[in-house]
Length: 133
Image (tube, rainbow, N blue to C red):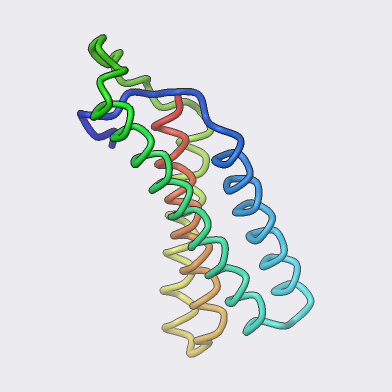
């Protein structure tokens, strides 16, 4: 899961802000879905997916910049073992993706799309949790 050339480093304030916004967008998406507005929920879910992807790219680019600048002369520490947050997010994301397939088979495309988006977002959250330890 962790690229071999990136070493775990503490998150920057920008990365923390992107992560918090991703969680906030996901929460708004769930609330809108519960209120019966699945199209708006899907839009906020896509925003959460985008913000999560951007946060991961910022982290990768920062690690690459540090490596190229020569400031990271020590070999990267061994990859941390995924913790409980990783497994919880991964299991929840997988369950949501399976639920989206069920909703798709039942003919509810809006529900299926929301559950698929939420599953993908939680999968990316799990990947980030595995990278940060």
